[in-house]
Image (cartoon, rainbow, N blue to C red; front, side):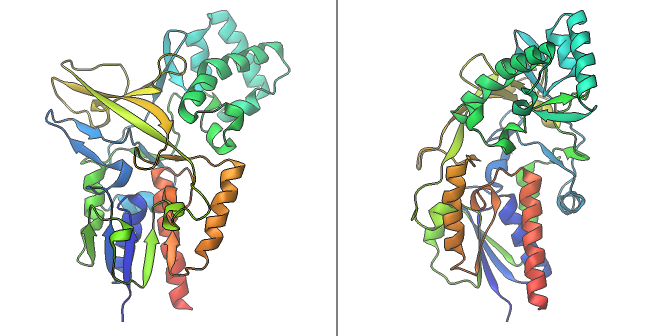
Length: 373
């Protein structure tokens, strides 16, 4: 008799595993979400001005995983948007990650040229150097540059975003903001990049449109009374165990939407403010799908600590102490062999969207191989 599955969470992780179970195993799936919408934090919607709003901040899809790209393209076409991020550095708008072009934006030409030559002598072209690694320079000019980038791009921005000093942030996080020895102005260099033409919500809706899948919104795991053969849990693993060993900390984000009667508010989809203001960046959503409107909508992004019942979990804080706590929950999970944890919250990892899908596809293949034994 086919198994009946419960999937907790209608984001990319949950929707992917639900679709695979329904389609390839021909099993029934009930997928629930405590929110009143599908697509998790990738949820988007068109407002009254015809602008596609990313409710939980800009989501830019990018991947090098062929299987992930092929899977998602079954449910949506993507445009060819390639993300560039602008930051205000000493009053100058320039691309980040800090690269060879940035040198000429913020320094006099002769100085930029000297720094460029030294960088090319010290590093390979197209190399990404994590900022904390980049600080280990002996040359006086490169020492100056590393201190400049650290202060102007990294120090204050990291303090705002993570609420702590860069030295206390996990290396996997700091590596996301490198010094890039290249002229490539793109934020990502993945082979596949873009935005779903009808939005992320529409994409997830099509993933969940299967006769074997039932969607229940405004439903938490604690509301479920039926028994299931398997449970796929994409919520926070500490919440599943009623915080038995304590709460895993997260950073959260608060977005303040503003509407303006003008074609564009800024010259780029995202502008970062590493030093100025309390917000970390400003998103302008019209850029992603080239929406046409007499109005524009921006979102100012403010980072804050996660507080249960007040805001959303966004970013795990994978420092040494928190990893130990997470591993306690992981050991506890071994007592529940038919419960599978996945996703950013279930795995307590800083996943991009493609990693979330890849992880779900990988889990499904593991289940398929188990069934063959």
